[in-house]
Image (cartoon, rainbow, N blue to C red):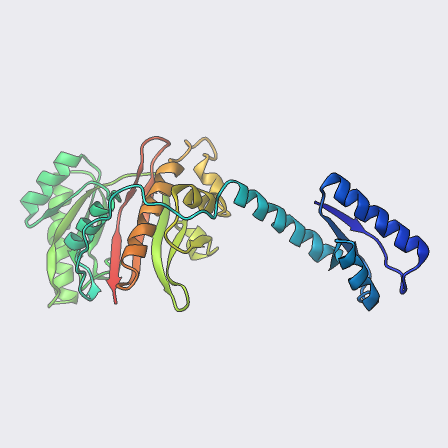
Length: 319
């Protein structure tokens, strides 16, 4: 495409007719679409709209807005050429339909649902005693994380139901007893599934989620964790389902996307694994679109390239 910025006279004149006829002829001969732009603040005479239309020249008005529109049109043509907007195809079988009930889903049911869609959770085991917690911690290796699993305390920190960076057996035993005592003191009737023992993993912290829009239904939210989402609201939103390639494009569009390639000597993160997870979550959102109110995987820790990505915490609320 070609943009031509010219000032249009108030009336058609022989010279202007000749000029625009020549531009039209060149457009046809070279198979180039021509846009006529102007710096004039006032719209041109009405006769020009008809004449330019007859010559198959597109008048787009103000040149600043026109250049932005042309850029977006070119991007759109490129995206269509690479079949970005082609229908997304499912790569695996449809998981068995699950009855989710209503309200906050238990950890066990959430884990089962994520496993059905191939969405990896950080290695973890549910403990019913301090002894079981220590056994799980020593199996995963230190440091580890302990958290109380209960549908009645979805936000664990305010109930003292989360401990990070536990380095040894004594720390695990102490954390186990203290957390349960704190929860029972602050919410005596809480239904406790157990204490989840999780391998503490480090990497780039991100978030994936499903939010409900009044017009669009469930939407897929992708972003970086911490300050990026809390202060900068640095997220990308797509309507599910989406392909892994589209998920990667969305993640690369984030303002903080440079963290994926490694900054200040850090290793490049496994953005491909994160994109694959996002695509799988989008299919979950699509399949259960009538049942999900919100679904947060936060944080999702992305390990160095080739090592994968894991959801560390998951909260599913059904309608």
